[in-house]
Image (cartoon, rainbow, N blue to C red; front, top):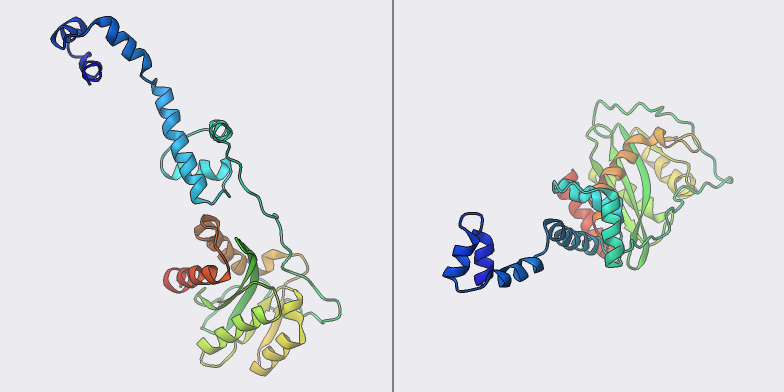
Amino acid sequence: MKFAFIHAKKAFFPLAVLCRIFEVTRAGYYAFAARIPSQRQQSDAALRRRVKALFDESHGRYGSPRIQAMLRRENILVGKARIERVMRELGLRARQPSRFVITTRSDARNPVEDNHLDRDFRATKPGQKWVTDITYVWTKSGWAYLAVVLDLFSRAVVGWSVDATMSRELPLRALRNAVQRNGGSGPELHHSDRGCQYTSSDYREELAALGTRSSMSRKGNCWDNAVAESFFSSLKSELLHRHLFDDCASLRSAVFEYIEVFYN
């Protein structure tokens, strides 16, 4: 305690005087001062603690680029190389699940529709144009899938569904959810990609029964469904990339809160 007090006050009082008052030797103080971590060492220690905390919060999913981005949000400006060095020292390596899951699987046996939407994402009233899409989410129990339906008038999510399998029932439940919210009516125009879930007879018959005209993106052209893609981008950056969910149930609960409480 004496040496620490002397170290804190030596800029204001002569060292010899402080040592005499506290009855310690200057040699003893110098030995104490040599053990004090340098400013760089203290900075590295603080950085190691924060990097470890961010890595743990991501459940081991964040590598140096994302950790750097999270630190930048906290006004901690650190180079990527320094973060990589700290992660190596701590033995931290981001866990990488399969990087890509195909959600658009076409079926040549099913007919496809022309792109009647034609990237005209404007709508003059609710229920005029709906767009839909499917994305995938990694959980501790494996992949899960989310289907959404958005109304182009409000850009709100009017229907959604989460499941552990990407079956035809997944987007059908999202569509039925949207129809129920719309008072039992479908949209004038429904736009999707050419995935087999949307070209299936079940889905097409559902749209026909609603009196809805079907529109589909051109092959391999994600910009034809840009509004749905934009929603998924926001969802991933604001929710999905921040958490590793246990299973479909926990994902479903989080998606409900994000869509119904926050996004809509």
